[in-house]
Length: 198
Image 1: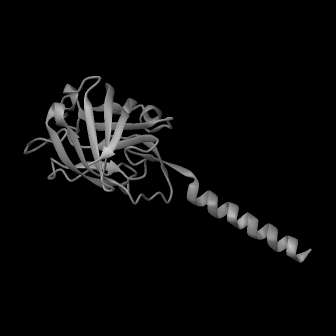
Image 2 (image 1 turned 45 degrees about the vertical axis):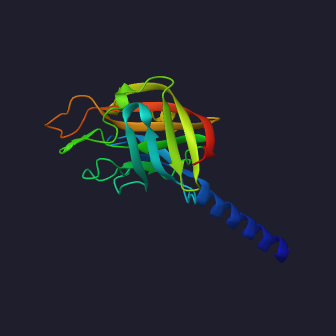
């Protein structure tokens, strides 16, 4: 009887432990706006994106992992690092199943930033993400969407999909000097087309 009780307690503790480390949590996130995203607790990737290349708009930029700020908003690269993009490290690595998210500034005080020309992308354009394992994940643009930050399509951007996808997110709209922010987000949706060694 004592063995059964101990075994039941061990199983219960294991279930609680697994639940703590696999449960999704909600957090406000996106590139400078308030959006709810899900991040898997304890997610860590040995492989990560190191560069994003978008020939059609002249982007060839380094990528660094970003997480969440204390406020719950997604961390974005420093405003002084205008040519740096940030990969949301609690999501999939580009090339894995699910929506990988890369954020970047549209404009800074010193001029256009990494995703300044993202609005010029069109369906069929190519985006390449160079990974730390030496692979290049090539994506094809499916479409663009500009939305008010207050109406951000969280599920469409961060929700589960059955294939490797990519979302580029930046600010858009006319800069609101009073709020000191852009009112909109521009989202680029893309799907994996191929993967190859770099």
